Image 1 (cartoon, rainbow over the protein chains, first blue to last red):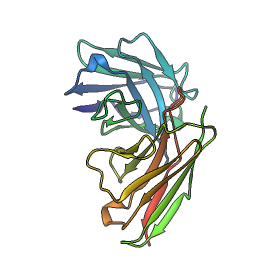
Image 2: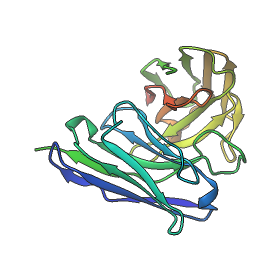
Image 3: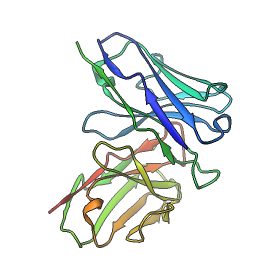
Amino acid sequence: AQLVESGGGVVQPGGSLTLSCAASGFSFVAYGMHWVRQAPGKGLEWVAFIRSDGTIKYYADSVKGRFTISRDNSKNMVYLQMGNLRVEDTAVYYCANFYGEQVYAEFFQLWGQGTLVTVSS
Amino acid sequence: EIVMTQSPDTLSVSPGERATLSCRASQSVNSNLAWYQQRPGQGPRLLIYGASTRATGVPARFSGSGSGTEFTLTISHLQSEDFAVYYCHQYHYWPPWTFGQGTKVEIK
């Protein structure tokens, strides 16, 4: 099982960027998906969640109204559309979920390698 | 929102010694607490879940304890690969899913 993020890069403040996460090796349609970020030299911050069927979405207050999470179960993909980006959104963005050896887990077991987003003028 | 606070921020330990890391929750999370290890340039790796259960493949020198609001991660006989940053994470009440700010275990 693996998660592979892509789409990171450098963007100006106020700009937009879309991250992608490709899932493989597990039943994607059965799992909710999360984005978690880590600013340079800082800790982990949960960003967004989407339920397995896409009907429920949650966001951190810090990104609510600016970021949108979505998924395409036919392609085993999850996305994070980021708008009105701020300098403080600069971070490595990880795709993550609860899939792993512990069935019915409610904690993160599977993580991607991350993709770096830099917001700078 | 449940706030997780780890202490200390940095722990200096000699190889072969024991490291004791603490994590406090702002309200009870029962035993819904996990610990992760993160090495430089890598994503987090699950070590402990349910406050005290080691994940598959995690060496026995890692142990977790606690419940409610106070938790401890103990690493006995530190080895070179154990020098990293450790995060606690509560999954009792969400959203949001929250993490501690991390404890860096460095070589003394």
